[in-house]
Image (tube, rainbow, N blue to C red):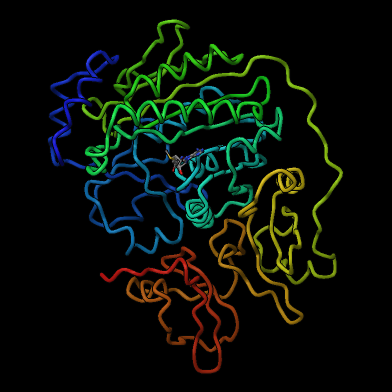
Length: 457
Ligand code: SAM
């Protein structure tokens, strides 16, 4: 890693909790931390994953684990099955911030405003009340596609992926109970992982990022309900992007700061702003096992208005067709089945209720789980269904070895190992990877082309 530029280290000296020598040492050390977070609806026992690798819990996240070495995630079928998400450990603290500020016994409407590639969204989805809805938004189109793929792997039915500019959310006035703004930032907290970023760092960029962070917050805040919770985070150490944004927020908006209880053994630094005496939390890589991170929580003051109701409803799959879809689902009664351009989309009842309003105001990239295309003959199942948590467990399935699974994930041709013709789930150690169709003498591989493994071993 290139040594840290003086212009950068000069900006760190008076930061709360900063210890220069240890900080420089940890940046000079070759040690790299790898951590993953389980998808609890698919797997509870981490020992099923990563043979030969030691796993230790991340102290502030109930599903997070450090790995003693970095496996090749590309060549791990469990990764493609959405059994876990590879996430930096400090970021997993979001679970604790939400737990301490939000009533998780209630169904909530949550927004992850800057969501790609999906670390915070998948974390939120795994902890919110199941009747909650989560809007995962990303402004950059290519990144919104990546976010949608990661949400597909994660497999939940109550997530809507949108591709909008933060200012579009002003149309949803007082709508969300929880808003996470994991803002684009100058990225100094990730220097250990991304050495190139070290050479690109400049104070001018810190200021540009800080201005952009203000713009993003000002644009999106009208969509937060009075009484709703805002969680703001960055992976920058800069005061201009952290404490100064907190002060700015409290100067310009009716926001109350929410402080968190921090277990001293976590070594997270509490920072108190000068003017408003508001608490934020700093993560330094020399003091804990994770990268540089900052997080602060707020509640919007005021009283919530009754929610606006919109008259439009989604188009449901006709009753006579439902019997054809039911056998594909674990709990056929629990879903709303929407028909959209010949496709069947599964939604939770709450997501179905909110969809028309969201559709009217935002560009939806993905909603719920696509079950498949309903033709006159059959339901052609979609990849999203195979990876979802609502697919039936007793469908025909073929279990593959590791080597076969990697061929399947490359979309190679498959040998037909069964006489039972028709659609079949492809599994690896009990975990769904996708679909294949068994024909007379062969099997067609339906793994999506755009998600296939391209790298050689
Ligand atoms: N929350 C994500 C996660 O945990 O995986 C990481 C988000 S990353 C720190 C910030 C995101 O904000 C990027 O995906 C970036 O494309 C997006 N972004 C960039 N400019 C933006 C803008 N002007 N408004 C909103 N989002 C922006």
